[in-house]
Image 1 (cartoon, rainbow over the protein chains, first blue to last red):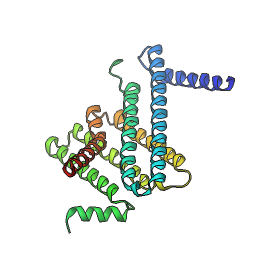
Image 2: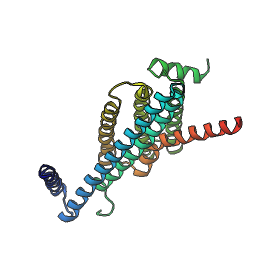
Image 3: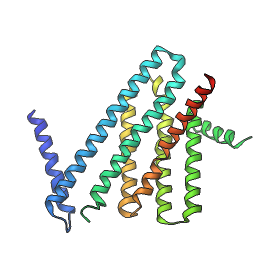
Image 4: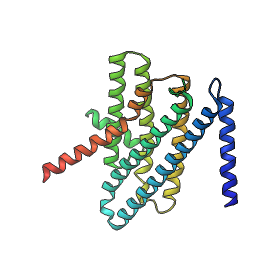
Length: 107
Length: 139
């Protein structure tokens, strides 16, 4: 617990320090909040998509093991599902990059 | 030899052994080619068109890599999840670098970039609709 707390606090400190470094002409608290929000947002998106891909793969493997003849159809469905999930992660990445580097709200 | 067979033969040589996956990737290649042609014809070499094409090519690269690995995924006996996640995060890192370059250095239009990145989703939706229609015909 203590170790995890230390890691979280260190990460927050790094993110806040980085935001203060690149923030020019923007209020430091706004830049810090933006950097923290993007870090947390991308972390949630990547973790969620990773979990989703793992679950999809688990189900596909189980389905193929139970019915090997359906493996072809399962593979195509799996690839489509993985592509959808990956698209979501890329959209989250784009939104986070916009927030960090091309944020229209802070001009 | 039709163009479809030529493209499929090219894909087969590149390691796409599964016929349905090959069709999916072929459709994606057609879609990205059509998108790039449309952008070039309709908008010339405007930044909007270049962003659209860049997004479409990036999405196709991601899909190519995913499909090539994914066709063997369900048959792997060991290490499937770990290799899938490593590849996923690797692709995400590369995509992040490219998108960072496009947004920050290239000052690309975000809407065009997202439209290009959505070509994979469009391809998947077309595939699903085509399958649904085929099933409806058979029923």
